[in-house]
Length: 187
Picture 1 (cartoon, rainbow, N blue to C red):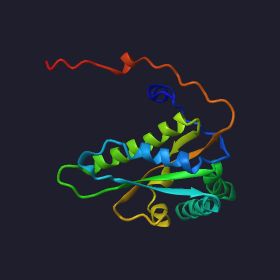
Picture 2: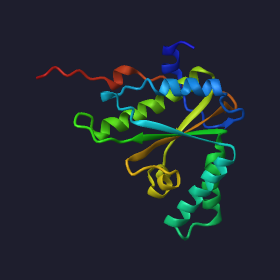
Picture 3: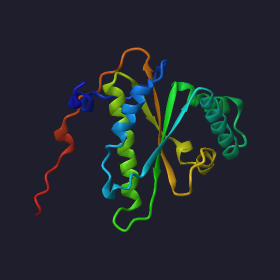
Picture 4: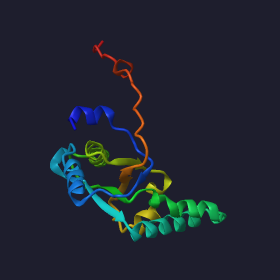
């Protein structure tokens, strides 16, 4: 697939099934991520692969955290949390590794990790895979970070759900670039 086609036509695919990306496809996903802009060459990212039974364990972690923060949570909410990681055969957790640096603030490092995540989404689309970037309150939760063995200097940028698209891909809306561009004339 042409790079511009991938950039212009990528869409999130929420309905995903088997098979998961092959080892060769995963290699390309990560190679794309590693080309993210990276001020200072800090490589402020890492990735966790979650698949198979580990998805059920992640669902249990999500349910425990929901119950911890909402003791009145009923079975329906807890079951929903348990089912979240089962929406795709492969999840990649994108993690920002924040480092003290005189010239590269943490905000830039978070953006770089976000660009790495976007690289994965673009590479997935270019290979005919389906992918969606999910966040939500659990991605910002200290208990989830602890359950995933993240360090104090690490933040979850997002959960990338990857698999085979189920059904037709939606067509992205046509947006007019001029609606998002203004000219600064310095006056």
